[in-house]
Length: 171
Image 1: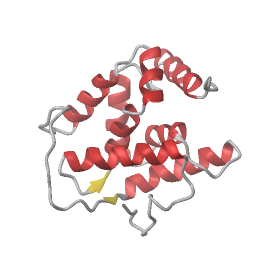
Image 2: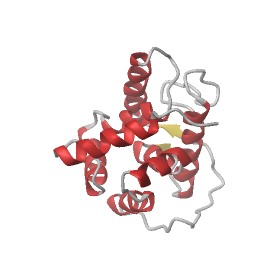
Image 3: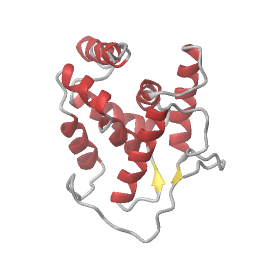
Image 4: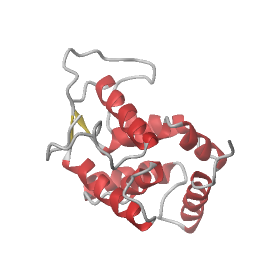
């Protein structure tokens, strides 16, 4: 899978293993929907299927399936979570909007003192993606489940989500 400028996600050294796995899941979600361009909505679907993100969402009282259904409904996609649309063409390219998400994610990684994008960087990129049309949809989806920056309560819940995602994992 490549971005519009030809960068390959699979060979990119700028992603953690978890972030690459989320992108792979996002790619699968796009193909399930018979989409051949990776969009931020697919990244959101990939994120909510990550076990750590799924756990953190549940810890703050958000059911990942509700986000999934909101994405599907918001974009008028007629497919149930278990359905798969098979297409012979499995090539997929990331849109300019995904490039914007990755730009924000890269800046977040740099703030943490690394060049490796992780899952929380992707989440931040999705939340702050600058395309106003898609950002509005993303904000609406996240706000509909109590995550966002519209109200103090939403912001507090979002902050708690980040705290859970950034907790050291016990091994």
